Image (cartoon, rainbow, N blue to C red; front, top):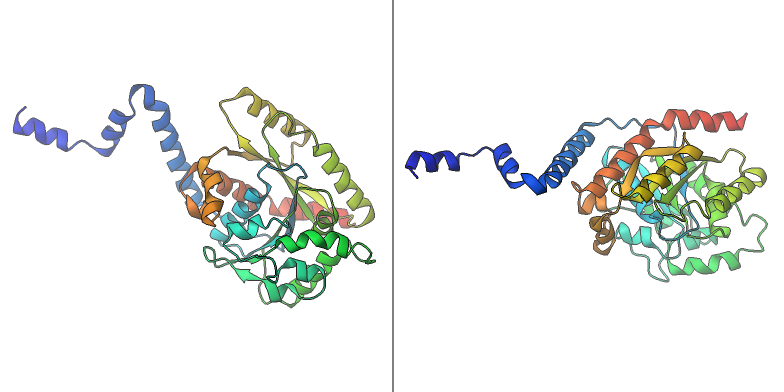
Amino acid sequence: MTADDHHDTMMESPSETLRRIFDGQSSALGSQMADESSRYDALTHASFPKPKRTRLIAVANQKGGVGKTTSTVNLAAALAQHGAHVLVIDMDPQGNASTAFAVSHSSGDRSIYDVIEGRAEIVDVITTSADFPSLDVVPASIDLSGAELEVADLPNRNTLLKEALDRFLEQTDTVYDYVFIDCPPSLGLLVINAMCAVTEMLIPIQAEYYALEGLGQLINTIGLVQQHFNPVLLVSTMLVTMFDRRTLLSREVYGEVKSHYPNIVLDTTVPRSVKISEAPSFSQPVIAYDPRGIGAIAYGEAALEIARRSQHVLEAIDARRK
C-alpha cells in the first residue's frame, strides 16, 4: 500500500464508515439507527402547542404491568421538556411515579395521603423535579394504601382529590398546562377520586393477547363515574405500549384497538425497551436517562400527538358540558 492509498483510507467519510460497518447482514441495524436519529432530530425541532387551558388527565388501567406509571412520567417529562408546565400527582401507594422523579416518599413523609385525609394541602407536599424545572410532583407513599378504608364513611369520599386539586389550581401562581394523575392498578376509591378530579382518561394498553380483556371493565367503570359523579369525563387517549413491530400479534392488537377506538388511539406506539425498564432504578424517566434512545423518542412522539390534539379534546369536553 502506498502512502497515498493509506491516506485515502484514513480520509474515509463518516457515511462511508457507516456503510462499511453496517453493510450486509447488519444493514437493518444501521437503518434503524439512522431512523432513530432522524426521529430524534424531528422531535427536537417540533413545535409543541400549549393547550388553551389546563388539561386534567388520569392515567388508568386496572391491569398491572401495562406501562401505566412509565407512560405517566415519560409523557409528563416530554411535555415539560418541550416547554409545558406539568403537575404529576402520584395516587398509587407503590409510589413508582415518585421514585421515577427522585422524590422522597417514605412512610411518614408528607404526601397525597395527607391531602386526601385533610391534614395538608397540595401546596404543602408538592416538590419540583430535579431533571425538569417546569414539572412538579405530588408524591405518594405506602401510607396511602390505608386511605380507602379511612375515608370510606365520608360523604364526599369520591371527591376529596377533586376538592384539593381545585383549591390548589385556583390559588397557585403557576399556570399548569397539564395535570397527570397516576392511578393504582385497581378500580377502588383512589381511582374513583382520580376520575372525579379530571376531565380526561388516558389508558395505556399492552400489545399482547389479553390486552382487551379488562378494558371493557374499565370502560364500564368510567361510564358509571360519568353517570353518577363526573358527566364531562372523556376517554381522550389510548396508548399502545410494549409494542414489537416484528410480531404479528402486536400489529393485530394495535389494529383491533384502533378499529374499536379510531379517534382516541395514538398513532405512536411505545416499543419494548431495556432502557425504559432500567430508567426507574436510576430514579429518572427514560426521557432523561436515555434521551436519544427509541423509548424516549416514542414517548416524545406520543406527547407531541397529545399536545397537537389539545384543541379537539378541549372542544369535546366543552360539548359534554352542554
